[in-house]
Each structure stands twice: as structure tokens, then as C-alpha cells.
Image 1 (spheres, rainbow, N blue to C red):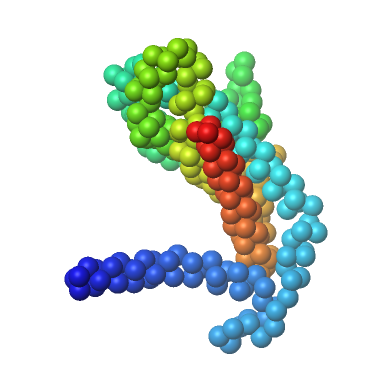
Image 2 (image 1 turned 135 degrees about the vertical axis):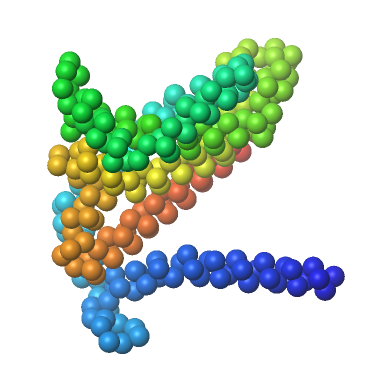
Length: 268
């Protein structure tokens, strides 16, 4: 019992140290975002909301936030529409092709963002399909970038709930493949889909290299906006970063809540 208590205390201490390590830079950024003057003291001499006020009064910030939101939402939504049925068919009806699919979806990891951006620009800036500098090219690049997260998350969820056995059981009860997928399998894998969606959305919302190189001169996202304004004021840049994290937190909580409700209704 003593050994178990000691091990539990050690694990809690390690988790606490890791949590402090992860949250300390964010906390320092938040303090700097609210500081009016902070130079030679441990804490700021005075506090202010002027940096946040300046940020929200800037129409470029609101436009960049909206651009990031709708580009990420379209890309993630398109990926869900394509990947959920594709991964389901592979897992249930063609498991032999999973090894090939695994090799394909990890390719985005092997190609650096700069190389991918240059290749896309050279490919789509000439010829019959000229979509360089457009949102279509960026959405396509986003779709490819989140393939590993979508595939692995959906596949793990299907294997966890034993999708082939669920389909067989639903078939024995008289449900067709489509109805069984929509009413039995999909509600059970909803939590995994939500996690994949959150991870993919977070990755795309923080993407800078692809966005800046593909459409940075035409479309401004939140990361491009932050990069352009970081040299003006450290306080303003900190305020933008904190607003970015808060926005991601709100979106994540909303999606998780929605996923829990739909999962509960489906199981009911």
C-alpha cells in the first residue's frame, strides 16, 4: 500500500510539473498582453485593456479571424465527408488495403510545408488549371495536410467499437448497410470523429507556412496577421496570441459538447 501511494504521489507530481511547464509560457503571454509597462520588475507596474481594444478595433484582425474560421471549417468539413465513408469501407469491407492506405496518408508528414507549397504553386500557376493564390488551392492543401489525423482517428474509432461485428449484427436484425452505418456505427464513433475534428481544426488554424506561401499576398489569416504585426508591439502580439488560444478553446468546447449530445441521442 505504501509503495502504491508513493508511486501515485510521484505520478501526480510529474503531471503537475508537466502542467506548469506547458502553461507557464501561456500565462506569461497573458500577463504581458494585459501589461501597460513591464520592464525591470517581477510583475507589471500597471495593467490595461488597450492592447485588446486596439486589436478588436482593427478590421484586419476580424477579417483574418473570419478567413481562418471559414477556411478551416470548409477544409475539415470536406475531409469528414470524404474520409468517414472511405475509412469505413476500407475497415469493414477491404481491410487488406489498409496497409496501402496507411502509407498514402502519412505522405504529408514526409513532405515539408515549404516544399509542398512550392510544388503546388508551380503545378497550379500555369496550364489549363490556374488556381494559384486562390482559396481553392489552399483548401486542397489543407485537405491533404489533415489526412493523417482524420484517417487515424476515424480508423481507431471503428476498430474500438468493432464496426464489422456491429454491421453483421445490424444486418441480422434487418437493417441495410447504409441504415446500419447511419444509425448504429456513426453514433458510436461520434466521439472519435469529434476528437479528429478538433485536432485537425487546431492544426489548420495554426498553419502558417502553407497559408503564407500559397495565399499570403491575397488572403490574410490569423497567423499571417500575427506575423505581420508582431514587429509593431510585443504587447499587441501577445494579445493576438491570447485571443487565438481563447477562440480555439471556445470552438473545442462547443464541438465536444455537440459531439456528446449527438452520441447520447444516437445511443438512446
